[in-house]
Length: 144
Image (cartoon, rainbow, N blue to C red; front, side, top):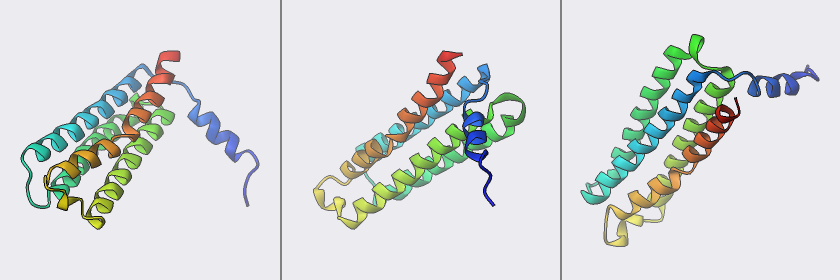
């Protein structure tokens, strides 16, 4: 049985109070973007066979580390709404990167002559959720 007030409760939770420490979540997303760009640049300049796997594994480990840091500090430091947006942003980032990498494999991007070129393109496309998440988290922090 669905409660009529359930959507209102969810909206209120997302519009809840903001903690000054929520700015750390923004910097964690900026760090994840830097890791994405760094790994993609390295693999584009020094291409290796199956470089997409190194890229995916690198950003997954970076995301797991950031989620681990955020989860250990969650209870007393971050607001529920900001941790939700943080996790949603990382989830969208990971999902889009995996979809783009696999799509690249299916359409044989590797045949383009420069084996690092597809990884750079996929990294740029997969980076889209991070600026959106950074904007969403930062917008609420600027208002408070």
